Image (cartoon, rainbow, N blue to C red; front, side, top):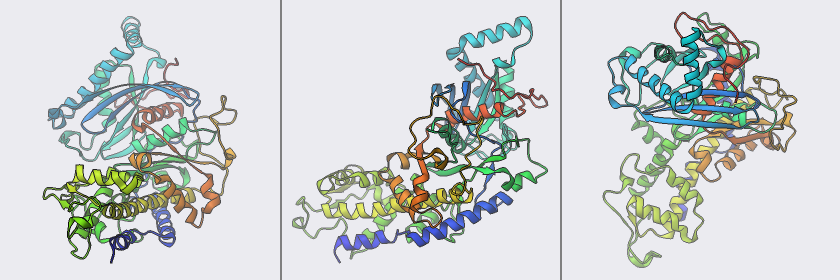
Length: 540
């Protein structure tokens, strides 16, 4: 069998056709509804206590901080009220000793000091004026307080828009006395100790932030339905009808939330969709990846879709072929069989033989290489992966398999998007997402919109796959057209746009909504700030 035919046989193992897509969509909808009813389900469906999205007319100056790993970022975001914003930021590395500090106070006081440094550096006039009035008059004005969105990328049990109990540390952090405590209160305590004009208004998930950032910057009047990340990991957050979130509305232990919009943003945590493998494809390469992963049996959707895993799936497929003596990949009986007239060799220490040795960016190179004889693929295999004298036929075989892995990921992504579009009823209704203000009469207009605005279903996406993998959106749209409840007509109504910086701009917008919708937020345990229905910041 010729190499091209054998490569096609392997590529076909990654097929995920229309019937499989439709079956998976039905399962996604079933798991969505199950997760809204109860805890402990495959789709977590976490209520975020955020009940409206921005519409692009909001103004003011807000703050955001992002503790996502080994760095801490502090931002201020000036919203201009015309879908645009200006961002100022500082980033600092977390000292390793603080990642394993004896007390949470050591870490959170360090974070508060970075906020103080940021205010002194970038907002000195306001900060010193606030201190002067507080020291001479003894009180300050509500308008002088920054609302801050806190992106905290560790597992938390969120019990309010600005309340979340740390479940466990990850990413090298290990501070035992913080577990079970409200991380917003820990930060607020240290902010108050420094006398800073800052209120921790919202605890933020970066996927929810992606939804908010897109809704602020998107063209037209319609609020964004879904924010999705397709990068190193994958997740989605969407706007759900409040009365469907019964595990929240019927719970006696839920925190306070605004009920006036009738909606709630839900964090799906869809990386764990179909962990039971009722409908997800499961090739031998998927099985091997899962068995050798640090978390076998969970995040099964993410392991087929996200950038962290696609390179490894391709690597396992290639290694499997190299072990098959009947498969002529990277093999020449003599140099005359190779178009570069040199015998192909794989170095013994090639990353292809090591777990996680093949970076997912290689799939993007394969998809985008239209050069004669696939020169870019061959050069990358030589330079980065220790495979010398790769033939054009070898490169084409690798390209075909890589394309199949990437296309399957995009078609799986379409399953999640379609499930949310269908289950929220947006295809059947012209009603858009609730926003912080009514969208009618927005002036200036929010960009050019080809469809009638009432027909648009807006989706914000972020991540390396949607940004850098060629034709990823095209593959998503191809699958959407094949889904029974969407079809060509429905697919045309779905507008997909890039949303950047959910942990910065998105976090600031959630802080805005926390104030704008009149939610009580506590800077200190036992102290409730007055409710207000105007955003608490100062305008430029």
